[in-house]
Image (cartoon, rainbow, N blue to C red; front, side):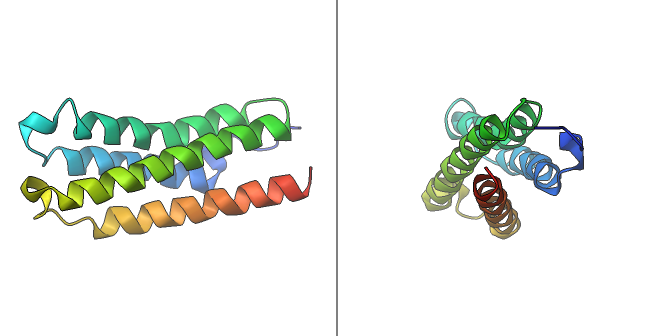
Length: 122
């Protein structure tokens, strides 16, 4: 696969970075006892999304890129689950999740579309 664009030019990567920043800001509002539990897990899952997009884009084949996009999508699903858990915990239920959920949904749709395009052209 010829690299014609930097991973930084990919809108899905840019939105993944934006999502990571929002997750950090969101989890700063969590109780201290969640610092090494849900906070840490959510941050790692969020950071994994753009990180895997970047790593996959720098690989030499479409197959490799697609594999890393699948990993990014898995991390997005993991984050989606963690957000749902956070919403159900009484100590974090007063926090608004609307913006972050909308962006996460958008990123997941973009990842699915990019995966489909790459697999169709394989």
